[in-house]
Image 1 (cartoon, rainbow, N blue to C red):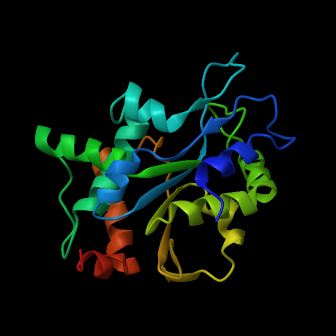
Image 2: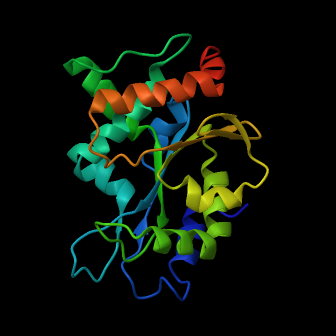
Length: 220
C-alpha cells in the first residue's frame, strides 16, 4: 500500500495544488500514536498561515515541535476532545480542570492525528462551497489518507457534510454519529467554535455514549 508520505508528495503535485502553499498533515507524533489507548483523527477544513505566504509547512511538526502541544483555543478544544476519548471507559471522563489533566489533554492531542480537507491556499475564514469542492476533487485521496492512518474514531469538525459521500455505506448509530465497518465518524462542531469548553466537551460525550462508541471504550 502507498505510504502516507508518498501520498502527500503526490497530492501536492496535483494541478490545483501545485505552486500553492501546501500544508502537510496526518499523525502528529507517530511514537505517541502507536502507544495511544485509542486512535483519534480530527478531520478539519483547512490550515492557513501568513496571508502572503508562498510556501507551505508541516502542521504535524508545528504542533509537535514548535508548540509542543496545543496552542490557541482551537487546539485546546481539540485536545480536550482527544482527552475525552483517550480517558473515558465505562463512564465518560470529567472535563479536565487541573494542571495534571491539562497535561494529559496536551498529550492526548500529540497522540492523535489531524488532517484537512483543503490542503493548500488555506484561509482563516472557510468558504463551505470551496471546502465541498475540494472534498469532491480530492475525495479519493482523503479517503485513502484516512485508511492509511487507520483511526478508530474520526471527529469531523463541521466537515461531515462535505465528505459523507466518500463513505456511502456508513450507517447512522445515533444523531450525528455514523459507523463504517469498525470506524466511527462524529458529525461535530469545528474546534474553532466559540461555545464554552465544557459545553463542547460534554456534547461530544453525549454523542460518544449514545452512538455506541462508549461500548468500545469499555473494552479499553
